[in-house]
Length: 276
Image 1 (spheres, rainbow, N blue to C red):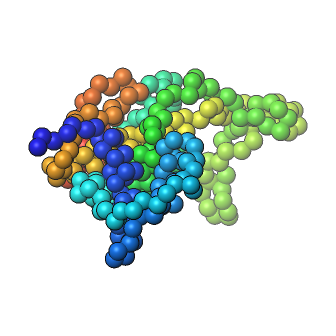
Image 2 (cartoon, helix red, strand yellow; image 1 turned 180 degrees about the horizontal axis):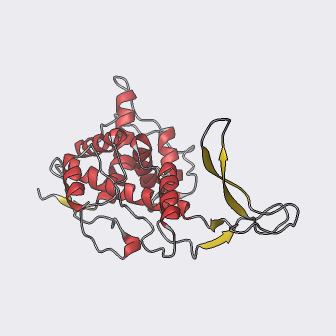
């Protein structure tokens, strides 16, 4: 019998939402047990998918023996669980803000480091991200938050603060080192010569970087799962359709990623190394 073509996102939804709850009931059932009512997990899934609670309290018991999940669903579940051991890195030169002009190198570096720290892009968090998106639908956001403004740091008086650098020894006999201090003369209430303002970004692009890293980690995770299951499915034929990895750059589907490298899939690692 010919295999049925399916998208990776639809395959994940079928396996995790429809089939794996069957497996849980099957494994927990004893000899001669029958399915009398939907499980609590099934109710949670309905709430996540439909957005409403489905009342099943009045339904008649289902007089049938619990059935195991489809073998293809077990293959998909195994591949999703393997994401928990993923090792993902941000390669040197990666820029999630390539469409944001006017940032300094220091501002870009700070945004990328902080954005990476808050993104759900590693190990069990990556697996949870994939599962959560399967249950809730949609994809992580990657869209711009609008113009980024550079504003001076404001002091308690509501005015822009002044700063200056001085050379100051940390202790007796120690060499002088530069230190940033208040740049306003307390006597004249005017800035010292050479004083400067410091600026902050609003909204700070670290939030956008974190969202884009999370989006791209999700898109890469789907590729990793697809690599693991593509040649092991018996009833499904996996389509090549995948979410783009760089949609903020107007990317058409180009295949290999340049942001994250995983140790789970050797094929994904090789592709990433080639593209980076």
